[in-house]
Image 1 (cartoon, rainbow, N blue to C red):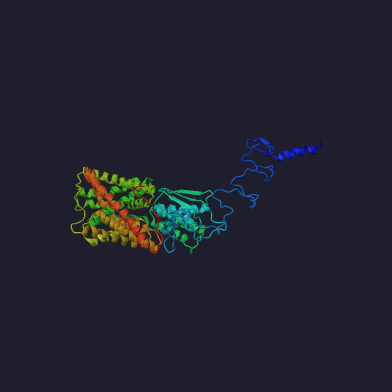
Image 2 (cartoon, rainbow, N blue to C red):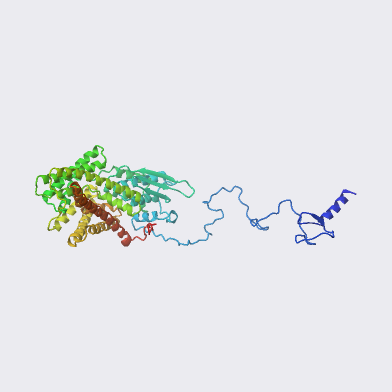
Length: 565
């Protein structure tokens, strides 16, 4: 038998055989063979099995489907990269369940309002950047832009500006140079800003420490003007020009010399003594005591002593003059002299800024500011209590129950004194000469409102103070919006006539004479008056933003937290 004949029967036998499910091979012509549902029917052509595995799944591509082959060298992507099959023109637009937020940022409103609105938004919901300032073709230098924003924020924070406004200014600087994905962060002594070009790029972060704070509202107004020019589309300010203007602002000297500041402190103390019922002699004594305290504080500052000891030393001369007049049996109100001297030392500016930061959600900065106020207040307490204690030991007849103010109030004299007090406060804050008149009138209006409610209407002093401070905040915010400037120069000096000087003095005097309960009651009243001033100023500013809005179409998003969670 040949090899071909030998292979043919085997091939026929193999072709007529079927595979049993158990794996046994049975011939098709066997009578004893059994069939099953897995057997191949007769006449069905079964293709020959290939060399490759025929195992498939639901993810396999069907035969006949033409799919473009993948590129030979496709770059490795990530979860944040755009798919290669994505087309922005053909993509379907989906509306989120909560709706698309409507953002309308009109350019007729101050930059502070626009920046506050965008800072409250998530980064993905912020509107597209406006035309940026001129810079190189390669784009702005990110570290230099961040450094410029930090330097501007440092001047604003050192000048007493609130944390929310400092963040808005820093964000405005970054946005004006095209850095939209940035997040500023402000605390009491540390400024930081972070910029991330995209979700897959490394962020760039810079920080700066504020080591010295000094109230200079002229410098503050110049910084606001610079930020306003940077935020304006029509005013193109290059990065080099912005640095040059910032250097000029830093080099500018204070608008008032040292002797003017000393005279202003005397005018402030004298006017405050007249507000509480003092006469000409009381005015002179309080002015002399305040000027001596101011010079002693300058001497301590030159020696490098901290501000705590400067306040302690500055509080002793007015108290010493008041005690000396009492021991000399002079026909003057020593309480009015001491109260007037305390007015020049009460940290009203820091108190208002601290409460404002707390009300706007910056609790760390608010806690630090209020702690600073507490330290200054303790320093004043130590200075005055030391003098009062020795005065009581020497036989000074200081009566804690002595009511300040005359039997017949003199409204015109008190209004004049309130105007003088606001004027002196404005000079001490180094304000621009153009703003001194407006803040002086604002202080006079505040005292008129307070006198009408407290003396004429016999309303609680705390409520009267809160309403008068609210009027100050409202008018100050209106003036600031009219001039596209900060509201501090129009509000801080105007609250001077409302500061709780007399309540503070009587509280300290009660403690010095072992009348602890009476002293603590007066000090509690002083704290309540101070909080009423701060909350009233902030509420007046918020009312002007909320209801008047002056052409503003946007609202600042706030934290929605109720029921304590």
